[in-house]
Image 1 (cartoon, rainbow, N blue to C red):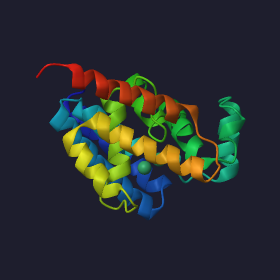
Image 2: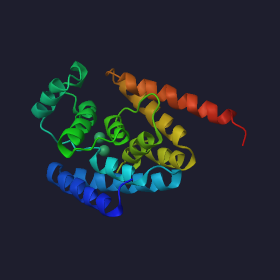
Image 3: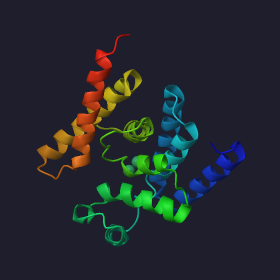
Image 4: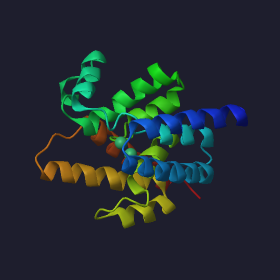
Length: 201
Ligand SMILES: [Fe+2]
Ligand SMILES: [Fe+2]
């Protein structure tokens, strides 16, 4: 854990970078994700500092011009499915920028950013917190978001599974490509829910 002074300095650095790189609406979204992530981390005993930093930085690459995003996708060898797909690519490219340009190497922070759009098999508590904070912050307004907020209060795995299933159904109904990480994350969260239901109180 960083000292309070070091942490505050890092938060300032992240905030400056985000304010510089993101559109004003996206900065407001980010501030709200930070507030949600910090609250969830406190409630569930996750590392609050890491949650704060990951939340500040999760969309760092969101407003890169498409050309630049594609350049990163090729440079990082992410695979063709990330080309011309900002929605998927910004998480992976963001994690690379955080590591290479901001010098943040903490794998938990990098994973949480890298998988905030899709989730993943074996999602950590921090992964779940960033994924959910992003999906439920107060500016989010889509069918099902109220149910998601209810589930977040109840159980994080149930909330993740609900959100992932919604994505899966939506993507499939549009005949679009479903990222395998989304499916793996959904199956993982469903297994976790069953496991917790079997545990005696
Ligand atoms: Fe994002
Ligand atoms: Fe976001």
